[in-house]
Length: 323
Ligand SMILES: NC(=O)c1ccc[n+]([C@@H]2O[C@H](COP(=O)([O-])OP(=O)(O)OC[C@H]3O[C@@H](n4cnc5c(N)ncnc54)[C@H](OP(=O)(O)O)[C@@H]3O)[C@@H](O)[C@H]2O)c1
Image (cartoon, rainbow, N blue to C red; front, top):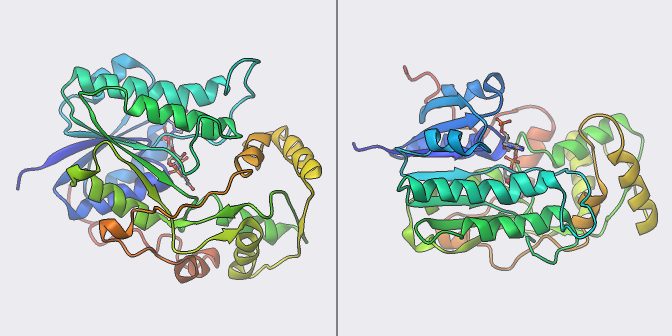
């Protein structure tokens, strides 16, 4: 069998693990750069992974070493938090670097080295005029992803993604484990959560389907929920249902500002709050067009939120294959 190789930048994260795992069923081999080898070396156990390399992907010279020899590049790098923009700027420097400058550099490197195919991860709601820096920078990132005609790009926009290691339902489940009640901002914001395995299947499908070139692919699950409903479900599924009290907007923004200034990775920022001012839903999800039946949250979230099967959907059949 002739193998193709794909460089997956940001492949060490939640969604990356699932895409890598799904590629086991194909003729694609994978290389993953990471900022911290020790945090990502577990990927070497997944059969399609040829190498995990510590590298600074923002450095063009590093990209010139990583990109050549691949038939495709996938970019999953994304951040949720960054500093506020200075006056006149639409987002702060961290969002600019991770969401806009990086895809521009990757696409340029692909063009320099004759790598024809690029799959780019954006987010549902990406819009130049969106209320948050996250969504505005994601929109500019999409433009960067399509910026070079020599590179055939597909952009993905998922709604919030759920799965055993997700950063969303697990957060609300954990908060309800430790606090007697939850004070919730943006309680009526609407989401259409999509299962991580379905997102991974969509990437693998697009890698092999040239008709997706030049397209923006929205990905969403079968049902729309308010944030309040999702938080309640996380409490019920994890066995710690707590009262959820919706905060009026000024208090919710104050709460976000306070959380933003807590030490460590913030639970919530004003920018996250601003992201939720627009609904995160779509009637154009492409899953079914790709032959993927969208998985219901109720089908999988109860088991992983109870902590029973932390990696239930990562297919470990080939984990012991000799390397
Ligand atoms: N999860 C969701 O619900 C969701 C919804 C919509 C869109 N998305 C988008 O999907 C993508 C992947 O999401 P995820 O949940 O898998 O994220 P994740 O678990 O945080 O993984 C992202 C990976 O990107 C790398 N990374 C992060 N910040 C970086 C930076 N400043 N420079 C270079 N590399 C960096 C990290 O790899 P190393 O630490 O190994 O370097 C990390 O493992 C992101 O673009 C996100 O915006 C996610």
